[in-house]
Amino acid sequence: MNIVDQLLENADKLRKDANGIIPKLIKDSSKIEFAYNPLEYAWNPHSEYIRRHGAMGAKTLLVGMNPGHGMGNTGVPFGCPKMVREILKITGLEVGSPVNTHPKRQVIGLEHPKPEVSGTRIWGALSEIYGPENAAGAEVFIVNHCPLWMFDENGRNITPDKLTGDVSTQLTEICDQHLRMVVEILQIQRVIGVGRYAQKRIKEIFKGEEGPKLDGIPHPSPANPFANRNGGADWRNAFKEALKHS
Image (cartoon, rainbow, N blue to C red; front, side, top):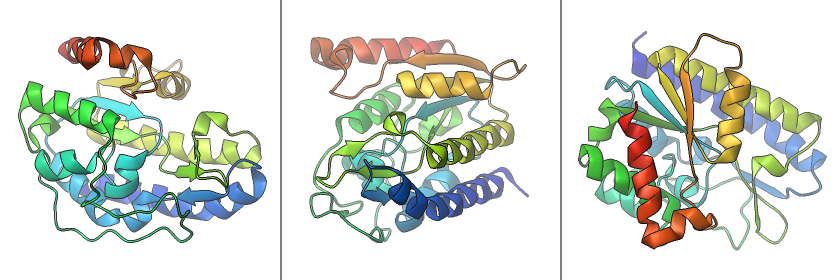
């Protein structure tokens, strides 16, 4: 089985495992009323991203926490719709809808007009460094640790670091296993956690192993003051500096 097929099989397993855990997660957690799985309803662009970027030889893995508005609509990690259309040139693929949709969190798909700051910063910087379309794929592959985009009854975003309980532990375990397999399939040499949660997870996953070198960068979210400093220039410089050491 070639690398792309292995990555697709691994992502498909995560998709199915996440689907199976969603009802338990909603029942178990007092915080979560809605959980979207973009690997399910946005599998078309997600699998296209893997096909285009998965076999280009990247030895650096960027790991985010979980989907936001970008991947939630496009299936692409940090996939701000505009970036996915204009930089990655992934267009015209059908995106379905989550099983249960919050009225404030409608999924439109690749044509969603709303930008995502984190995705704009990540893919914008990568295109500056490596070039547009899938040029970055020769150096960097991107995944999120958790595939689920989760909300409370008011549509407020609930991130994985806010979850507790047995089902949360089960979710973490299936996400950890997926990440281990990505590293193994691609023979990744360096894993960079994007933000504190991802940095914590990769340290736990690869603790005590003679595995990839581990590193981290600040999260590009506008909720992070550092990411906004000097119009985002300080974050871009930190990101580019981290990639130089890959």
